[in-house]
Length: 221
Image 1 (cartoon, helix red, strand yellow):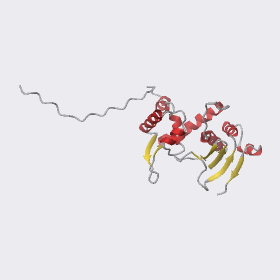
Image 2 (spheres, helix red, strand yellow):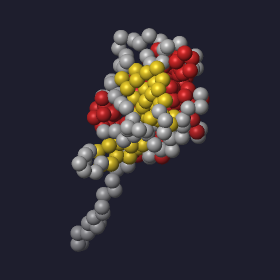
Image 3 (cartoon, one colour):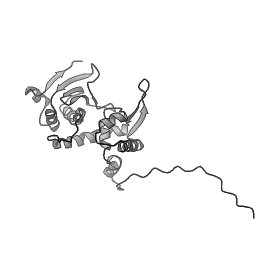
Image 4 (cartoon, one colour):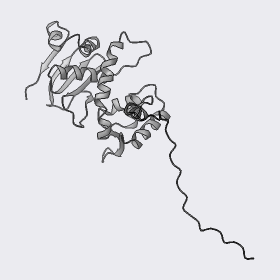
């Protein structure tokens, strides 16, 4: 009896990516947490609200995250349509991560979370890292409620940043350092404690200026 012919070779099916942990609940909140509930994910979103960031920049502004975890979270965010990785044109020629429109929709989530967490910021713990731009979201929300609009430069003892108050429409919400020349509507100089009081709604900018706790300069268009 002739030997049975071997079956035709087939292209191997690539393995499916491992399924992420899920709450397996048909609930919008549970589905959202399936995507962004892992540790570090929302803090990566916080950093990417400043615009495109290189991996090394993200790692520097997320003290405590391991390189493996950061890489894993970024891959998860790419897969879930929250972020994209692309190469900047020459002469920079660096790869950066950037939020997608879907990822940018997390801005109100981060804003509400930051506003809720401001009362927890009492005296800094000895192990706490500090970055000036981490004050941006609660300050931005308070300035919006006070009717501010435009780009505001903020100078703290911890550093300098600028933020966009009002409609962001996918634009960077804040950035480190001073804004591009001629773009700021105002500049605030204050300390971190005063900045937190504004974020808590305990102090208005006008009152802070009157009390000598804030130096305010407005720029005419």
